Image (cartoon, rainbow, N blue to C red):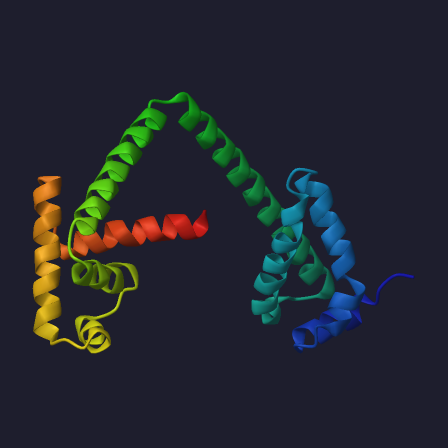
Length: 197
């Protein structure tokens, strides 16, 4: 039996979406899967949902049920085309990346980055326990000086001095004028990388 498009359209325009999802959604999803192809079919639902939202936001501009249906189908088609274009661009980008010198550059940067991390952690390990604890709480856990001072039962100025000594030691070993902000970025990046891995 054919859906009652007029009723569905009128309900849709009034913000009642149950008839739309019950009657039309499965067919729209099949349409998106068909035109997206087997490789991208898993993203078809995103295209349909995005098209529905766009159509819903402009529901007052439709002149008729036919106009609404055509716009909805065109929206889905356009989103699938965008998806295919992006997939092709990403594929081309990955292929170019694998064939370019950029891989070598990326590996070189990764080696430099890892060397810097090794030096930083070696510098920290060479310091007394209270400095290692300050490093852990400040740069790994991200606590503020006042919080660290409270946890370690010392004055906040003591924590500031310890951090200054930490940075001096790291600067000496790196042979670079690294600041606290840069050190935080390097450590945070390393932590994120291990969390994802």
